[in-house]
Image 1 (tube, helix red, strand yellow):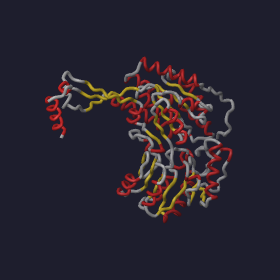
Image 2 (cartoon, rainbow, N blue to C red):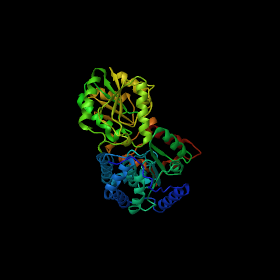
Image 3 (cartoon, rainbow, N blue to C red):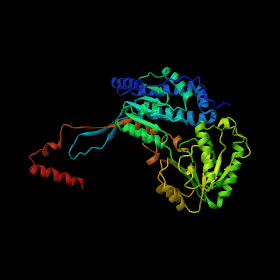
Image 4 (tube, helix red, strand yellow):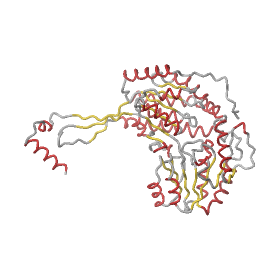
Length: 484
């Protein structure tokens, strides 16, 4: 098992503002020299990305494990590699179709013989700011659609991904020239400088607070942004849904990556008359599936600051009258390994810290409720979440929640699985983000869907030139009749 002492021997290759600017200029020059890569080139870029990840998988897993202190190997494979490989396979299968010129309808009343087309074209250079929690998934998945759309990319990694970043900086030149892809390390001010560059598009994944700063910096260059932010994503168990199945799916999701997932269940509504049973079943599930949270199968909290924040959050909840239930009761935990035992928090209230911000840890507040209108009132008083999870087999109730609760994405009868569906767009709404990527929407996000009107040899507009007279009246009246 890895220790959590940061390695002081990891060399830093800090990027200056000048270096960032030079890289952007280099990539933009390459873009102007070849602004529209063909299918063969785009396929080669996607294949190179797949080779880089496949050929270096053990080293990448080890680097991520070092950055976490302990990160479950299986969770890295499932949450990072399998998702990216599935995304690559999906993109390669659909790339030709995405690249096709689209036919659009023409208004023949004025332009007989003309035609409309939409031509997907690359934007140029895309910047990507990556968080630490899924550093391969959240860097490589955007690259899939950036490369599919024919672009070039500069990627800024997190300060908490130091070992992985150093590895990628060394690996990438073996697969991509610098005018196609560069990786940059965060050393204190790089993120600020990076977000101020005049990219053709900027994708940021992280907190809403940082997202606002990124958007403000990008606005100075009128750089379009895609913001994938967090938020407090609720789940609700309806009375009809089998409680054991709900426990299995919700607790498994909550403990994946020790709860450090932006689309995780942040708080849960349980029918009041089933609350005690839910707690008992959750304890049983954890005792079976997490018999030793000090094992490599249970992921550490990313750093000491985050660990202490979660400890303080629990203390604050207890001070404000919450009931804390440790689901791994009786297990000795090594504090220096930053292994936080999974916790249920009953009777949470608005003044508690854990109900005011995204938790990002293995802590699950539970709210007892009696009617679905109570759920609706509570959720809709708050910022729109990145995800919403409803557990019910009643179609009318599913549709009720879909109609009345707005969120970035939805899972019905499970949690956290919608981002893994590559034909579904992924993105937030309101404070949980803006814009989409994944699937065709990812290709479209990093393309200019360029509208082109082709005029024919004849145009009826020749009869509408001034000075206007009876002929213009006749033509306009005819067009108005045709529009009815």
